[in-house]
Amino acid sequence: MNTLLLSALCLLGAWAALAGEVTVKDGKFSFSLESVKKLKDLQQLQEPGGPRNTVGSLVPILCSSPSFPEELKPLCKEPNAQEILERLGRSPSSQLHLPRMEG
Image (cartoon, rainbow, N blue to C red; front, side, top):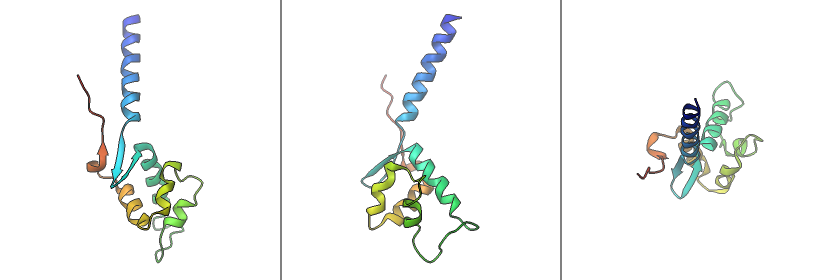
């Protein structure tokens, strides 16, 4: 029983460590997967049916949201913030960077 519990804790610890290291990169920027997921949720709220401004940029709306991840706030000052936020919201698997397992 103790061996099973110890094994389960080791697996859980390994998974937690791995999940914490998953990053999404866009050019010179690198963000946690969790922050990108939060961004995607916010963007979905702005899609048709929501208070989206189809003429202007969504950057001010997203960046002023209390739910906007702190980690992403430096993007709000970038001249191409709209493009970066759109790419991160799509976050294809080619942007995901998993840590290398050494063994």
